[in-house]
Image (cartoon, rainbow, N blue to C red; front, side):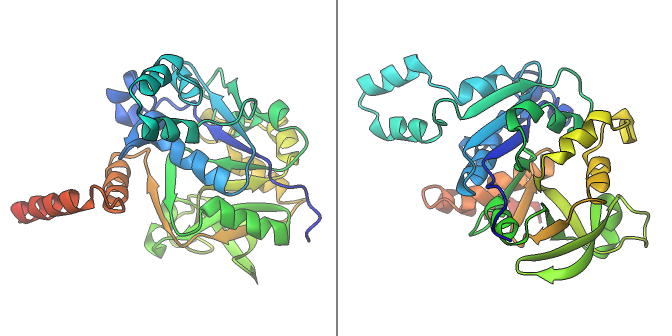
Amino acid sequence: MGNQKKIRKAVFPVAGLGTRFLPATKAVPKEMLTVVDKPVIQYVVDEAAEAGVEHFVFVTGRGKGVIEDYFDIQYELEQTLKARNKNAELTLLSGILPKAGTASFTRQQEPLGLGHAVWCARDIVGNEPFALLLPDMIMRDDKGCMKGMVELYDKAGGNIIAVEECHPDQAHKYGIVGVGQQLDGGFKITEMVEKPAKGTAPSNFFINGRYILQPEIFEILETQERGAGNEIQLTDGMLKLAKKQDFAGYHFKGETYDCGAKDGFILANVAFALQREDIRPSVEAQLKALVAALK
């Protein structure tokens, strides 16, 4: 298509309570838990930036002020590093800092679901398509998931959902899409089913937490009735939007770690540590020893 608006803005819903990580999340937002030496949210913001996103919109809640502080200058720390000639650390800090005016924070006062969190960003996003990245999910591949999605969007337009393959026996645990006409990098989506009953799933492609959505989703979410869990569900809104607009699936073939779950978070730390040349030898040797000791 080639004539659609560029994806300039990304929304990050970071208002969740993180109850699965209590007691740690009593003091530290789950998005600020570290994978090796970077907070989970940093990996997700980096993925959006790699895809060309210029404005980062965080939908926050009470107790999440530390996220806002993280993406800001910390004057005392930087002055101390300068005084001690810690230039590598200063460069590292400046690299994570968004340009002035490119990070926005808005509050989701009540935990009313993902659809409601997206709706809370409506005035900041405005009348343009946007990326949506769930901050619990961090991905690893040669090319970032969102970058691949933007490339598909530039060709196909409409709305894009990232999907991965699961074992067919596990399809009932996920939001599943129906597979239509093949596209370069993905396929047209024919249907979306949230946690289909066993044996009824239209495919084994599940939605993995990355979206490119047209702004008409905001009008739908504005008047949408609450669904499962008494929350405003994004999937319900996308189903309504799909009656009027095309949806395509971007087939992500890398690795995804659900850092909202303890096992996914631990595996992410191991996987990313093993990618680091500076710490891999020590970590790999000790992991092998730990596994051997358990046999």
